[in-house]
Image (cartoon, rainbow, N blue to C red; front, side, top):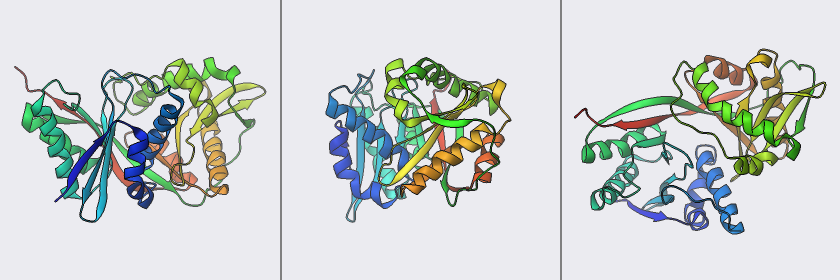
Length: 302
C-alpha cells in the first residue's frame, strides 16, 4: 500500500524526499536540482509566479519514501516530471493525480504532459487518459547518462571562461535558441517555447561557461551546482557557424572534470533522436543509466 503527499513549499519537499533523493542522486538529479533552485528562491522571497500552482509529491510505502514527482515547469506545456519508482508507487501517484482531477476538472493537476521515467510517465498519463479520454503520444525519447572517467578530447584553439554579466544578452539569446535548434537537429518540429526570461538567464550565469577564441565567444556549456553530490551538464550550445570544431567536446570535458575534481558525480540527458550529441558524449566517457520520455495526452477527435 502506497500513499501520496503533495507539497507547495520546495523546502518541505526536500526534507521529506531527502532520503529518496540521496539514495539515487544521479537518477533523481533533475528533480533535486530544480527543487533546490526553487528552495533557494523561496528563501530569497523571489520564487516567480506560475500560471498554475506548482507542486511536488512524495510517494511512501511501509519502507519509507519510494517515489517523487514535481510540476514546476515555468512555460508551456507545463509538464509534470516523475522520477523512477516501483510499479506500486507509480500506480498510487497516478491514482492520486487522477482523483484530484476528478474532484475538479479545472484543477491544475489535470495533466496533459508528463516527462520522466518512461513507465511512470505512462502510468500517470494513462490514468489521465482513462479519466478524460484521449491517447498518449511520445513526443521525445531521452536518455540519462552518468560519467565514468573523463576521456579528454583533442583540444581546439581558445579558452573556457566563466560567463559574466557582460555576456547576459548573448546567453539569453543562445539559451532561447537552444531548444528549437536541438529539435531541428533531431528531426522534430519544435512546438514548445522553453526560452528563459532575461532574469532567469541572469540567475543562471554562475552555472555557465563560455568557450572563446581570440575574444569571440563560440560556445556555451552549463552545469548545475551539486545536488546530493551530483552535477548535471546542460544546456550545451554551439551556434551553427561554429559547429564541428570540437568546442562542445572540450567544454563539456573540462567542466565535468572540474566537478569530478571537487568530488561530485556528473550526469547529463541526451535526446535519443540526436545521433551527434549521443556519439559525442559517449566519446567523452558518459554511459547510459536509464531511458526517459516526454509524453502528451491528445484528446480523441470530436
